[in-house]
Amino acid sequence: MATVWFVGAGPGDPDLITVKGRALLERAGAILYAGSLVDRAAMRYAPPGCEIRDSRDMTLEAINAWLIAAAARCDTVVRLQTGDPGLYGALTEMSRALDAAGVAWKVVPGVSSALAAAAAAGETLTLPELTQTVILTRVAGRTPMPPREDLAALAAHGTTLCIFLSITLLHEVQAALRAAGWAEDAPVLVVHKASWPGEEKIVRGTLADIKKKCQAEKIASQAMIIASPALGARERDGVARSRLYDPAFGHRYRRVAVPGGAT
Ligand code: SAH
Image 1 (spheres, rainbow, N blue to C red):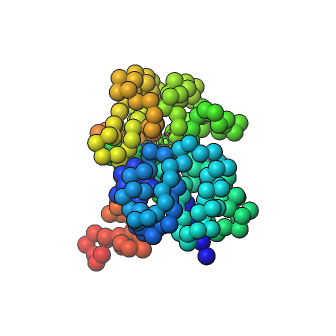
Image 2 (tube, rainbow, N blue to C red; image 1 turned 90 degrees about the vertical axis):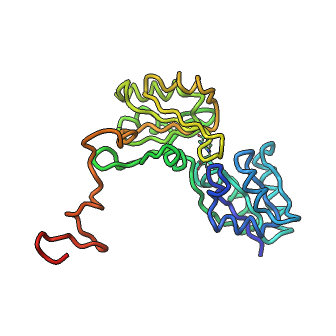
Image 3 (cartoon, rainbow, N blue to C red; image 1 turned 90 degrees about the horizontal axis):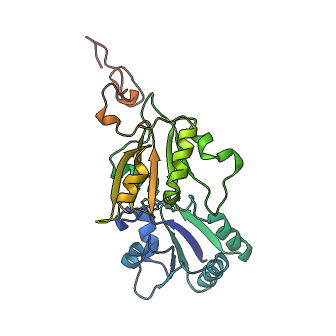
Protein backbone atom coordinates (compact mmCIF):
# COMPACT_ATOMS: atom_id res chain seq x y z
CA MET A 1 0.00 0.00 0.00
CA ALA A 2 1.23 3.49 -0.84
CA THR A 3 2.52 5.75 1.89
CA VAL A 4 3.20 9.46 1.78
CA TRP A 5 6.27 10.22 3.89
CA PHE A 6 6.71 13.69 5.31
CA VAL A 7 10.49 13.80 5.51
CA GLY A 8 12.55 16.45 7.24
CA ALA A 9 15.36 17.35 4.84
CA GLY A 10 17.35 19.15 7.51
CA PRO A 11 18.48 22.77 7.38
CA GLY A 12 20.16 22.83 3.97
CA ASP A 13 23.32 20.75 3.85
CA PRO A 14 22.20 17.55 2.04
CA ASP A 15 24.38 15.53 4.43
CA LEU A 16 22.13 16.58 7.30
CA ILE A 17 19.13 14.52 6.20
CA THR A 18 18.61 11.41 8.36
CA VAL A 19 19.68 7.98 7.07
CA LYS A 20 16.02 6.99 7.05
CA GLY A 21 15.01 10.09 5.09
CA ARG A 22 17.72 9.47 2.50
CA ALA A 23 16.69 5.82 2.10
CA LEU A 24 13.13 6.94 1.40
CA LEU A 25 14.31 9.43 -1.24
CA GLU A 26 16.38 6.65 -2.84
CA ARG A 27 13.30 4.50 -3.34
CA ALA A 28 10.75 7.24 -3.96
CA GLY A 29 8.51 7.14 -7.03
CA ALA A 30 7.56 10.77 -6.54
CA ILE A 31 9.04 13.64 -4.52
CA LEU A 32 7.37 16.95 -3.81
CA TYR A 33 9.92 19.27 -2.25
CA ALA A 34 9.45 22.58 -0.51
CA GLY A 35 11.23 25.25 -2.52
CA SER A 36 14.89 25.97 -2.99
CA LEU A 37 15.75 25.19 0.62
CA VAL A 38 15.72 21.46 0.03
CA ASP A 39 16.16 20.85 -3.69
CA ARG A 40 19.72 19.63 -3.38
CA ALA A 41 18.78 16.66 -1.23
CA ALA A 42 15.94 15.75 -3.60
CA MET A 43 18.16 15.90 -6.68
CA ARG A 44 21.08 14.13 -5.14
CA TYR A 45 19.31 11.10 -3.76
CA ALA A 46 16.30 10.54 -6.05
CA PRO A 47 16.43 7.43 -8.26
CA PRO A 48 16.32 7.68 -12.07
CA GLY A 49 12.76 8.05 -13.30
CA CYS A 50 11.48 9.53 -10.06
CA GLU A 51 8.98 12.33 -10.56
CA ILE A 52 10.31 15.46 -8.83
CA ARG A 53 8.31 18.63 -8.36
CA ASP A 54 8.97 21.89 -6.52
CA SER A 55 5.92 22.96 -4.51
CA ARG A 56 6.96 26.62 -4.39
CA ASP A 57 4.19 27.84 -6.69
CA MET A 58 1.48 25.46 -5.43
CA THR A 59 -1.45 26.15 -3.10
CA LEU A 60 -2.22 23.78 -0.24
CA GLU A 61 -5.06 22.32 -2.29
CA ALA A 62 -2.74 21.67 -5.24
CA ILE A 63 -0.14 20.08 -2.94
CA ASN A 64 -2.71 17.79 -1.40
CA ALA A 65 -4.11 16.79 -4.81
CA TRP A 66 -0.57 16.11 -6.09
CA LEU A 67 0.28 13.89 -3.12
CA ILE A 68 -2.98 11.94 -3.41
CA ALA A 69 -2.52 11.43 -7.16
CA ALA A 70 1.12 10.35 -6.66
CA ALA A 71 0.05 7.84 -4.00
CA ALA A 72 -2.28 6.25 -6.56
CA ARG A 73 0.73 5.62 -8.85
CA CYS A 74 3.69 4.93 -6.51
CA ASP A 75 4.28 3.03 -3.29
CA THR A 76 6.66 5.59 -1.86
CA VAL A 77 5.81 9.26 -2.11
CA VAL A 78 7.99 11.79 -0.29
CA ARG A 79 6.95 15.25 0.77
CA LEU A 80 10.37 16.76 1.52
CA GLN A 81 10.30 19.65 3.96
CA THR A 82 12.91 21.97 5.34
CA GLY A 83 14.30 21.28 8.81
CA ASP A 84 11.78 19.26 10.79
CA PRO A 85 8.27 18.80 9.32
CA GLY A 86 6.67 19.49 12.71
CA LEU A 87 7.84 23.09 12.89
CA TYR A 88 6.00 25.64 10.72
CA GLY A 89 5.47 22.91 8.14
CA ALA A 90 1.69 22.76 7.50
CA LEU A 91 1.76 19.07 8.45
CA THR A 92 -1.76 19.05 9.85
CA GLU A 93 -3.28 20.72 6.80
CA MET A 94 -1.70 18.11 4.51
CA SER A 95 -2.19 15.02 6.66
CA ARG A 96 -5.88 15.78 7.16
CA ALA A 97 -6.39 15.77 3.39
CA LEU A 98 -4.55 12.44 3.12
CA ASP A 99 -6.69 10.97 5.91
CA ALA A 100 -9.82 12.14 4.12
CA ALA A 101 -8.61 10.46 0.91
CA GLY A 102 -7.69 7.25 2.74
CA VAL A 103 -3.96 7.61 1.98
CA ALA A 104 -1.49 6.35 4.62
CA TRP A 105 1.18 8.78 5.81
CA LYS A 106 4.11 8.91 8.22
CA VAL A 107 6.60 11.51 9.43
CA VAL A 108 10.41 11.27 9.50
CA PRO A 109 11.89 14.00 11.70
CA GLY A 110 14.68 16.29 10.55
CA VAL A 111 17.38 18.54 11.97
CA SER A 112 15.72 21.86 12.60
CA SER A 113 17.41 25.09 11.58
CA ALA A 114 17.27 26.18 15.22
CA LEU A 115 19.70 23.40 16.06
CA ALA A 116 21.78 23.88 12.93
CA ALA A 117 22.17 27.60 13.71
CA ALA A 118 23.42 26.87 17.22
CA ALA A 119 25.79 24.23 15.85
CA ALA A 120 27.14 26.59 13.19
CA ALA A 121 28.07 29.11 15.86
CA GLY A 122 29.39 26.48 18.27
CA GLU A 123 26.81 27.55 20.83
CA THR A 124 24.80 25.56 23.35
CA LEU A 125 21.15 26.43 23.87
CA THR A 126 21.10 25.30 27.50
CA LEU A 127 23.60 25.97 30.23
CA PRO A 128 23.34 25.05 33.92
CA GLU A 129 22.08 27.85 36.14
CA LEU A 130 21.61 30.24 33.19
CA THR A 131 18.90 28.64 31.13
CA GLN A 132 17.50 25.13 30.91
CA THR A 133 14.63 25.94 28.60
CA VAL A 134 14.38 26.67 24.86
CA ILE A 135 11.42 28.48 23.35
CA LEU A 136 10.90 28.00 19.60
CA THR A 137 8.77 30.86 18.35
CA ARG A 138 8.26 33.62 15.79
CA VAL A 139 6.71 37.06 15.66
CA ALA A 140 3.43 37.64 13.85
CA GLY A 141 3.74 38.04 10.11
CA ARG A 142 0.82 37.18 7.90
CA THR A 143 0.20 34.39 10.40
CA PRO A 144 -1.09 36.00 13.61
CA MET A 145 0.26 34.89 16.99
CA PRO A 146 -2.05 33.37 19.59
CA PRO A 147 -2.66 36.05 22.29
CA ARG A 148 -0.65 34.35 25.06
CA GLU A 149 2.41 33.95 22.81
CA ASP A 150 3.39 37.56 22.39
CA LEU A 151 7.20 37.62 22.14
CA ALA A 152 7.60 40.10 25.01
CA ALA A 153 5.66 37.75 27.29
CA LEU A 154 7.76 34.76 26.24
CA ALA A 155 11.00 36.74 26.54
CA ALA A 156 10.11 37.68 30.12
CA HIS A 157 11.13 34.14 31.11
CA GLY A 158 14.74 34.97 30.22
CA THR A 159 15.26 31.58 28.58
CA THR A 160 16.83 30.80 25.22
CA LEU A 161 14.65 32.01 22.35
CA CYS A 162 14.98 30.59 18.83
CA ILE A 163 13.00 32.90 16.60
CA PHE A 164 11.94 31.63 13.18
CA LEU A 165 10.46 33.52 10.20
CA SER A 166 11.21 36.92 11.68
CA ILE A 167 14.42 38.32 10.18
CA THR A 168 12.53 41.06 8.33
CA LEU A 169 10.85 41.96 11.62
CA LEU A 170 14.04 42.26 13.65
CA HIS A 171 12.92 45.67 14.96
CA GLU A 172 9.87 43.96 16.50
CA VAL A 173 12.09 41.33 18.07
CA GLN A 174 14.26 44.07 19.55
CA ALA A 175 11.22 45.93 20.88
CA ALA A 176 9.84 42.77 22.48
CA LEU A 177 13.11 41.90 24.20
CA ARG A 178 13.44 45.45 25.48
CA ALA A 179 9.87 45.40 26.78
CA ALA A 180 10.74 42.17 28.60
CA GLY A 181 13.70 43.85 30.30
CA TRP A 182 16.63 42.37 28.33
CA ALA A 183 19.75 44.54 28.55
CA GLU A 184 21.04 46.45 25.53
CA ASP A 185 24.23 44.38 25.64
CA ALA A 186 22.40 41.03 25.79
CA PRO A 187 23.95 38.74 23.16
CA VAL A 188 21.92 37.99 20.03
CA LEU A 189 22.97 35.62 17.27
CA VAL A 190 21.69 35.52 13.69
CA VAL A 191 22.60 32.67 11.36
CA HIS A 192 21.68 32.93 7.69
CA LYS A 193 21.50 29.68 5.71
CA ALA A 194 22.86 27.60 8.55
CA SER A 195 24.74 24.54 7.25
CA TRP A 196 24.64 25.60 3.58
CA PRO A 197 28.17 24.97 2.30
CA GLY A 198 29.75 28.27 1.29
CA GLU A 199 26.62 30.34 1.98
CA GLU A 200 26.25 30.32 5.73
CA LYS A 201 26.64 33.68 7.50
CA ILE A 202 27.03 34.02 11.25
CA VAL A 203 26.37 37.41 12.81
CA ARG A 204 27.04 37.94 16.49
CA GLY A 205 25.76 41.08 18.09
CA THR A 206 23.82 42.53 20.96
CA LEU A 207 20.23 43.55 21.38
CA ALA A 208 21.36 47.10 20.55
CA ASP A 209 23.32 46.45 17.35
CA ILE A 210 22.10 43.17 15.82
CA LYS A 211 19.81 44.84 13.29
CA LYS A 212 22.55 47.13 11.94
CA LYS A 213 24.95 44.20 11.71
CA CYS A 214 22.43 42.10 9.77
CA GLN A 215 21.74 45.01 7.42
CA ALA A 216 25.47 45.38 6.82
CA GLU A 217 25.60 41.68 5.90
CA LYS A 218 22.47 42.10 3.70
CA ILE A 219 20.61 39.34 5.51
CA ALA A 220 16.90 39.54 4.71
CA SER A 221 15.75 35.91 4.56
CA GLN A 222 16.39 32.34 5.68
CA ALA A 223 17.80 33.34 9.03
CA MET A 224 17.48 32.09 12.58
CA ILE A 225 17.56 34.59 15.42
CA ILE A 226 18.78 33.26 18.74
CA ALA A 227 18.69 35.32 21.93
CA SER A 228 20.00 33.55 24.97
CA PRO A 229 21.90 34.11 28.20
CA ALA A 230 23.97 31.07 27.17
CA LEU A 231 25.40 32.74 24.06
CA GLY A 232 29.13 33.36 24.25
CA ALA A 233 29.33 31.69 27.65
CA ARG A 234 32.51 29.89 26.74
CA GLU A 235 34.29 33.24 26.70
CA ARG A 236 33.07 34.19 30.17
CA ASP A 237 34.58 33.12 33.48
CA GLY A 238 32.58 31.54 36.24
CA VAL A 239 30.13 29.61 34.07
CA ALA A 240 28.54 26.72 35.91
CA ARG A 241 29.48 23.29 34.62
CA SER A 242 27.08 20.52 33.82
CA ARG A 243 26.48 18.23 36.76
CA LEU A 244 26.31 15.28 34.41
CA TYR A 245 30.11 15.28 34.10
CA ASP A 246 30.85 16.46 37.62
CA PRO A 247 33.15 14.04 39.48
CA ALA A 248 30.87 14.35 42.52
CA PHE A 249 27.71 13.48 40.59
CA GLY A 250 27.21 9.77 40.13
CA HIS A 251 24.58 8.17 37.94
CA ARG A 252 23.71 4.88 36.30
CA TYR A 253 26.75 4.85 34.07
CA ARG A 254 29.37 6.33 36.37
CA ARG A 255 29.76 5.88 40.08
CA VAL A 256 31.04 8.71 42.23
CA ALA A 257 34.76 8.53 42.91
CA VAL A 258 35.20 8.23 46.69
CA PRO A 259 38.49 9.80 47.82
CA GLY A 260 40.82 7.01 48.94
CA GLY A 261 38.28 4.32 48.08
CA ALA A 262 37.30 2.17 45.18
CA THR A 263 35.41 3.90 42.37
N1 SAH B 1 10.70 23.36 9.57
C1 SAH B 1 11.79 24.31 9.50
C2 SAH B 1 11.32 25.74 9.66
C3 SAH B 1 10.49 26.23 8.49
S1 SAH B 1 9.99 27.89 8.66
C4 SAH B 1 12.85 23.95 10.55
O1 SAH B 1 12.63 23.05 11.37
O2 SAH B 1 13.94 24.53 10.51
C5 SAH B 1 11.25 28.73 7.76
C6 SAH B 1 12.17 29.49 8.70
O3 SAH B 1 13.11 28.59 9.24
C7 SAH B 1 13.00 30.57 8.06
O4 SAH B 1 12.29 31.80 8.03
C8 SAH B 1 14.17 30.68 9.00
O5 SAH B 1 13.82 31.40 10.17
C9 SAH B 1 14.34 29.23 9.39
N2 SAH B 1 15.35 28.52 8.55
C10 SAH B 1 15.13 27.49 7.72
N3 SAH B 1 16.30 27.04 7.22
C11 SAH B 1 17.27 27.80 7.76
C12 SAH B 1 18.70 27.81 7.68
N4 SAH B 1 19.35 26.93 6.93
N5 SAH B 1 19.37 28.74 8.40
C13 SAH B 1 18.73 29.62 9.20
N6 SAH B 1 17.39 29.66 9.33
C14 SAH B 1 16.68 28.76 8.62
